[in-house]
Length: 281
Ligand code: 13P
Image (cartoon, rainbow, N blue to C red; front, side, top):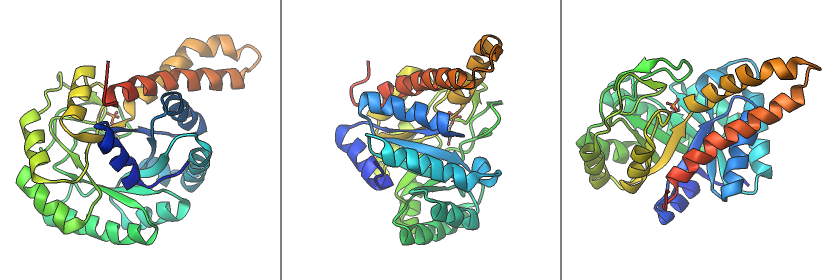
């Protein structure tokens, strides 16, 4: 069932857990994530990357993901991820997303705040939520190259930013990166605690692929309420293709291949969801 972005985050907060947000590029990817969430009875977010939305069929992808969420047995929401363009954000809301990530993290503070404020104004017309980013989570969202940490979130700025923009969730940069980690990750736990003290807004952690399990569980204990995962799903997709393509090419067994992809990606999503629960292993 579809619920609002804020309701998903509030429910996670009540449990001392985090909502898993997973990028889906097609129906199989979405079904894998929903299967994992349904098996665990966890709410979940399906992310559409801004490049996927801009690609041919982007609005159709949103419609398909929304339809899958409507039929799911758990609370879910579709979110446009990392958009910096207000026209694209409005098009995605028209297409059916329930949340935006308005990413002004490449802009100076004032420009970022202005972008997010404008995004919030548009989103409210659709009853949708908005996530913002302060500091910059480095790394490419579509190309899994090794990345070094970007500009870290300043806790004092975060309070001002939250108040000025009216965002519903703030993505923090505390040593997390998109894609692969160039060096073993060292998250800045003191900074996270400081940000937590400064603002009441739910915080999100991007770049979960490649973070040690213990770090993810600790981040949730430290107050992170949303965690984004993409690269590990894309990597698993290619692994399954490499492992199974030869056998399934015989007879062109496309449905069987789809089923294997869904099963394999569901395991990746389930393992992450386990770590985001209030009571990880
Ligand atoms: P990873 O690709 O590192 O998992 O990051 C995903 C993400 O943060 C999407 O916004």
